[in-house]
Image (cartoon, rainbow, N blue to C red; front, side, top):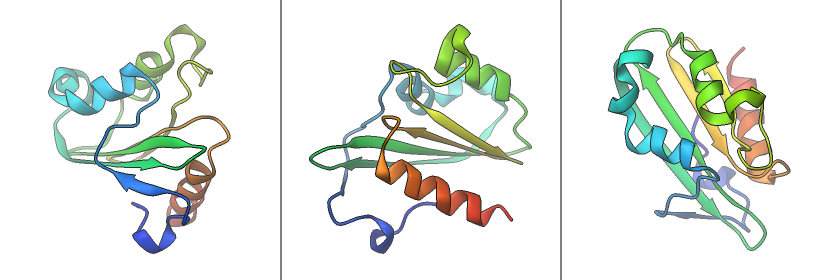
Length: 124
């Protein structure tokens, strides 16, 4: 589900620096053991960080040992009481079986749209 180098638009570059838009997404990725009692055991996690002259952000990929069933908690963690993306907390999420993907980009990010299209196409 990760974007390959050939799929990344030329104006973007991969970077090692975390580009998450909110502290909540960063904490979730950097300290997943803090949430294992709620989420269950994490089998693997990866992050892709991107920068361009007009955009930056991160895609967080988390795979759990068992089916992920904490969708409502993740929504509350990322968005608070709004229960949906906001300008301050623009993350969007995807759940399927034991996979959680978090896109931490601004709302109109071209790269986020590209990644979401790839994930949606792969879920069939």
